[in-house]
Structures are given as structure tokens and as C-alpha cells.
Image 1 (tube, rainbow, N blue to C red):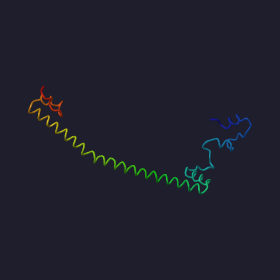
Image 2 (image 1 turned 30 degrees about the horizontal axis):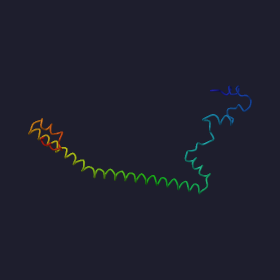
Image 3 (image 1 turned 60 degrees about the horizontal axis):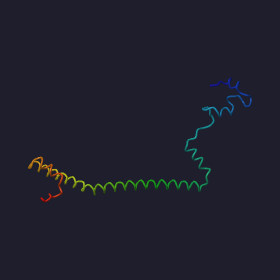
Image 4 (image 1 turned 90 degrees about the horizontal axis):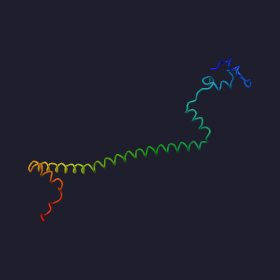
Length: 137
């Protein structure tokens, strides 16, 4: 960091070498005594004053309209998702239960055949469950 004396030596004489001068003060960070920091909201409010009243009203109406549309679409998508998944559960659950029940009954029949006729009979009949035996030639 350069001291005040080094700044005086390096100065070419084109400007003031005083560290408290306005030119140097604007360059150095953290030495702002007179200016108050504005918040983002204050800056935005200040920017709105440069537009006419009609433009500000139009921007406000567009913003509120977009907000209302987004909220409506979100509500609609939530409702549609709930209706879709609850309806599919109600429609497809009985089909799934019936398929499982049919598979369980088939497994029980196969187990009964295995117990009554022996393990080789149950395995040999698994390949042709739905087909009748061919007549002898």
C-alpha cells in the first residue's frame, strides 16, 4: 500500500496529490463519508419515477396477471395430478389384485399336483398348461 509521501513522489504533476481530494476520494473504497448506501428497494423506487404513470400501471398489471396465471396453473396441475393418480389407483388396483389372485391359485394347484402325483408330474405339465394333449397317431 502506498503512503501519502509515495503518492506525492509518483505524482506527475497533472493532478492534485492530496489524498483527501475528490478525485482520489472517489477511487479509494471505504472512504465514503457523505453518501448513504441505498437499498435495492429504494433504488427501484427511484427508477420508477423516470417512467410515466401509464407505463408503471401497465407493468404492475402485467406482473399481477402473470402471478395470478402462475398460481392458477400451479393449482390446476396439483388438482390434475391428484385426479390422475387417484383414478389410476382406483381403476388398476382391482386388475392387479385379480392377476395376483389368479397366479396364487395356479401356484396352489401346481403344489397340490406335486403333492398328489409326485414332483415329476407337476414339472412336466407346466410347459403345456393351456394346450390339450395331442391324440395318438
